[in-house]
Amino acid sequence: MKKYFLFGFLIVIIMFACKKEKTEEPVTIQLNFTSLVADNDTILPGTTTNITANATGEGLVYTWTSTGGGNIIGSGTKISYATTPCMYGNYEVQCEVKDKAGSSQSKAITIRVQ
Amino acid sequence: MLKVIFIYIFLFLISSDILAQCFSSPGNPIGGTANLGSVEKKLLRISAFHKYSLSDYYLEGHKNSDFILYDCADMNFIGSIIAYGLTDKFTLETELGYFINKTIYYDKRLVLPEYKSKGNGFSNSVISAKYSLYFNPDKRIKYTLSAGVKIPFSTEPQYVNNALLPMDVQPSTGTYGTVIQSYLLKENSLKGMRYFLINRVEINTENKQEYQFGNVFITSLFVSKHLHFRWQWLTENWTAILQVRHEYRTKSKNRDIEVGSSGSNLLYLSPQLNYTIKEKWNVSVIADIPLYQYYYGTQLANKFAIGFNLTRDILFK
Image 1 (cartoon, chains in turn red, blue):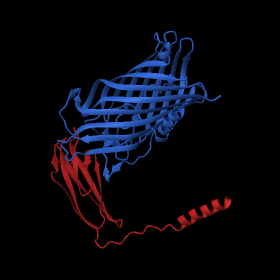
Image 2 (cartoon, chains in turn red, green):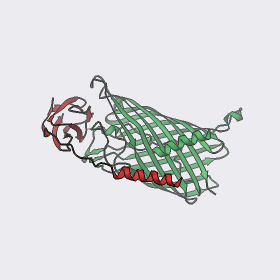
Image 3 (cartoon, chains in turn orange, green):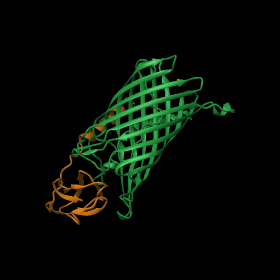
Image 4 (tube, helix red, strand yellow):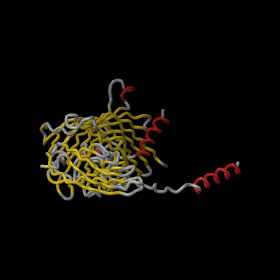
């Protein structure tokens, strides 16, 4: 019984020891985050505007964040930004684009709510 | 049967924390009568609860609003409160909680196709020290004071599909806080009645996103009555509890600027029915019915909440 246990333990150790380290895949198209555009950059509380990120590269992942308030609806290259009640002023929506090699670029856009 | 109940409570405990609240306030909803002052020495009190809450209309102040961002919002929360009596006067307590879901459904008139934002995960935990300041066994009066710290399970906001979730559905405040509570208990053994007055203050600090949820002031008055009817065999283990609860929330702050549509003044009526099994287990069902709701700005208002509560006392000799 002891032998089987030791054998199993050894197998587990070898599996972890032989685990390949993740290597970043080479890319042929360099990441280029060209623009971040809103359909309307001035909106009313309780309304939405579409925001589109234009970027080229390989295996792109878009991460959206809003600071100061407002809701992000959707994901990917195009989202809607919705404003909540009594929300007035300037609010920033950021988009970070990351490619499969791990390179990233960010842009932000200001939405005016009045 | 006991095994099933044990598994249920265990599942609650491994998950974690909540209290009753307006929808947009992450934190721990209050779970019925489980949270009642200090316990006796070497007594372990384990309480687990589930709460469902629905909000489906906007209020501006106390008047209906025609604002249409969300169609409705709901949440399922499971929580536990574990208290242990270190001495007859001193009790240590932990509150833990987990949002199974905290979901907003956008109004189809504004957002098409149908879309919802759903957050889930651990809320905050609260670790408190309770001290029984006054106890008069003849008059059956007890007063307990408690101070605790609110600890977030994560200080990072939650993202879904790489998009930041709205603050309304974040499961945790993402920051530390302070919780002060006091419990006044008066018993009338002859009439089988108990009266509780509970005050709770939660002070929140600013999180990493520079957002500070408003402070919370809750006052609850409970009256409980052990039921005695003609068919004693049917009613001897039942207790009816009526709670009137006032919740006041100050406005939240975003980068030191008050958030217009935040903060509220709410009054609830919470009837509760409790059943005792073999003098060890207490099972309760509870409902939250809004009597009066005033929201600063325009906010989604609570329609109702229902909850289930399970409590077990274990005395270590």
